[in-house]
Structures are given as C-alpha cells and as structure tokens.
Length: 303
Picture 1 (cartoon, helix red, strand yellow):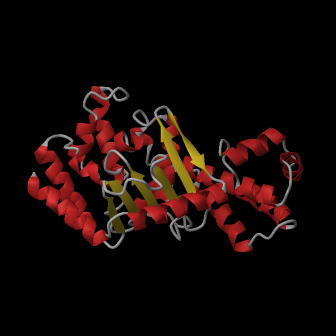
Picture 2: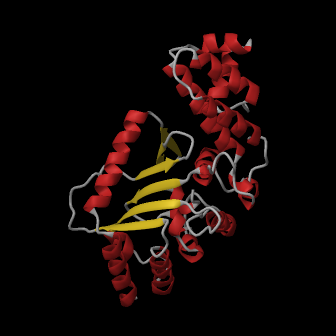
Picture 3: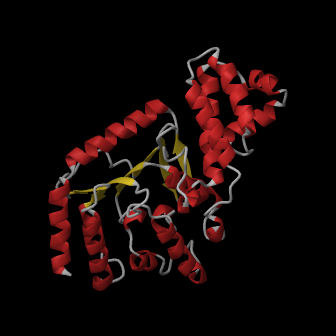
C-alpha cells in the first residue's frame, strides 16, 4: 500500500491552529460533498431538482457533491434547507457544514509535499488529518502512523513507485502526517497487525529494533491501541484484505481500500457497518493490548 510507502474536529469545526494545517481544503470539500449527496439522496431528490434551488446547472451540483468545486456556505444552507423539508436535518448540522465550507479556502498543509503525493492519495492524507479516530488492519508492514523515519526510508529502497531522489521528501511527508503522538490533538488510533510483521526485519536489526521500541513506547499512550494477531489464528475477517476506517466527529465514517494505482472510498453506511463489525472481531481475535506489548518486547530482546 502507498499508505505504507508515502504514507500515504469539535476537531472539524475548529481545526487545530498549528493545527489549521490539517484542515486540508481538498479533504474538506470531499467531506462536505458527500454530506450534500447523502442529504439529497435521503430526501429522494434529484440533482436536477437541487439545481433548480440554486438556479444553476445539474453539472454544478455534481461538482459540488464530488468536491470538485468549492461549496459556498450560502449554497449549503439553501440546499440543506430544501432537503430538510423532506428528511430530518438538524439546523446545527447545517450551520456546521456551512462553517466547514468557509474553511475550505485555506491553503493546504500538503502543499510542500505536492510533488510526492499522487493526486488520488492527497484526499486520503487530508481526510486522515481531519479524522478523530482511525482503525487499521495491516497484513505486511507496520501502519504508517507508527513508522519511524528510518523504517520508512528502508521501505523505499528499490521501490518502483518512488524515485531515489524523492525518497527524503517522501519520508518527510510521512513524519509530517503522523498524529498519534500529537500532544495538542492526538489521533485515536487502533491497529491490528499480523504477528509476522514483527519478524520482517525492515532496514536491518538496528532499524527494526528502534522501530519496535518506538511502537512499544506508543502503546503507553491512551490514544493508541495495538493488537498483534497471532499466526495461530488461521481464519479471521482480515483474510479478504487490509482494512482502514476513518471516523469524524461531525461527518459520517469512511472506509479506505488501496490498490497499487489508486484507492476506493467506502461510503455506504451499511458497508461501513460491516467493516466496523470486522474491525471489532479482529480486535477480539487478536491478543490484548498488554499481551501484544509483551510480544513486541520479546521481539526487541531478540534483535
């Protein structure tokens, strides 16, 4: 996964001050757009009917819902007021989305890394920066939020998708987006990792030992929960592939599935419910947090 390599709110209502850098405008437009689309579909209205409300083209409504165009606060209020006549929408929610739209014209904290982030990956990085909680199930490597710079750099050696000259900037981007140790606004992070991930000596024994010591230190944080899935658990919900879920204080959860040249966002709430059930079952099938810490400590002792 590129998440491994490039790594690729009221948190959202009041983005962090050093913190404002996490309020990436592309991600904000994406979130607002899907909320507009969801509200329209729940009200059983067409894009043509929505266009009549704004006296615009249907194409513009499509662009607003896809996040391609910046949504204006007054447009959001008008559309949601129209939809609220056909489905229940809280007035506070309307004001919150309008407020988010006002923030979407800020500069992006991703700008310095624009050359090393593929366009399809920038949305994920922005969404991750806005999320309040994330769940990750990893089959092959440690999650990006937990990686040290040395471990991340070792993953880039000979990588087909990252030129050697770009590697330092890619590693810098990785470190810049990590939030698990952010004292001001830490990401609530739950990870389930396969046990053999601990035995893949990325970068050599010294790099791997430092990496595992870093992970072990993070397990002491209240916002980090790491479960090791023993190889003895032969059948489980992660066999179909890696899982990532992003939760937001004031927006619906999103699932993220990456493939070599792009990604899929899972947004249907019935599917999200299944992913969350799978995440809970994976945590229960894996070792407890304390047992996992002991397994990580035992690997450190061997390096």
